[in-house]
Amino acid sequence: MSMESTGRVFSGGIWEERYGYARAVVVGDRVIVSGCTATVDGEVRHDGDAYLQSRTAMDIALEAVEMGGLTREDVVMVRYYVVEHGHFDQVGRAIGEVFGRVRPACTGVRVAGLVDPKMLVEIEIEALRA
Image 1 (cartoon, rainbow, N blue to C red):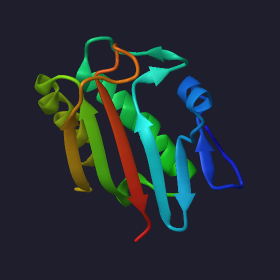
Image 2 (cartoon, rainbow, N blue to C red):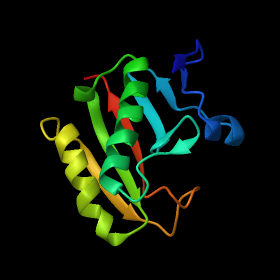
Image 3 (cartoon, rainbow, N blue to C red):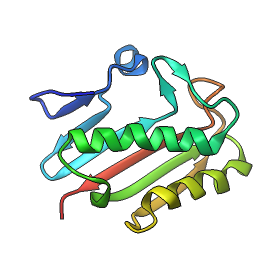
């Protein structure tokens, strides 16, 4: 990942270039991370496993938070989108493991689908310097 002087973080991922967005944007004391999936080097990882996809997506999101100058402890909001109702618990467990002591606000939503049918979950994170 790289941070530009514009306050934007780029991971070099295929969707960022194709759809014209940044992995994260730094605005003052806030880092807003775009939706992250388990896509690494253009390939969706952990086919069929919502828990492991969640962990991978959060690793990517937290790397962007850190590039923006904040840490896991600064995360104030997590939003996640799942394609199957049965994935809420798997994703929730992963979020609890990563953020259990931080206790950010959190919203989970079921959606009809994501950009790639192999993607089971997409996670957004916002962090704020206290």
